[in-house]
Image (cartoon, rainbow, N blue to C red; front, side):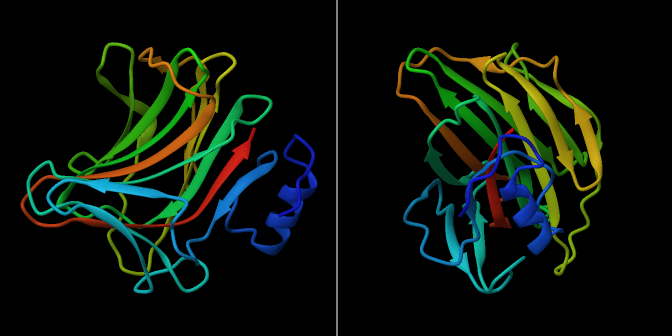
Length: 229
């Protein structure tokens, strides 16, 4: 994939917007695009009580396959889909993805983009709360706070996909913004958390689904972009 200029008018954004205008928000360089059309050996999957991520042809946003992320068959069981990539030079990064609506048997759908700076582990987490239809972010007091303007009812229809993007500034250690479809939340004053783990310099992306019953809950994910903002 070609690399563009480090602003949203860069070549790469123009290429993606021209070829697939419904698939990408305005952004800088596209560092990674995953359409889940090949084995997910670059990703890792973990879970409890059988929670797991797999490729499936039962649903897809583009191409013929997507990632199927499932919880286990116990209350509070989970499944994750994770991947690490190089940190962008500007240390401003975004993750964009499309997904299906979490079912009622899913307690939370969580998205985390974290950064190891060789001294500390900085992480930004947002989650969709199925019972309240609200998006929240994880704050400094180890508590969750509603993201203003992000109460979004995601209709669980078999053919419907939703688009979201989370953007972060690891220089300022703050969020930038969060988007879901045409909703936009300015989060530039919200700090990113630090839990002080020494590791190596990389971005780590995690999708996580948590169940609220003994029934397996499944969400589908497709067209994941990591961008330099």
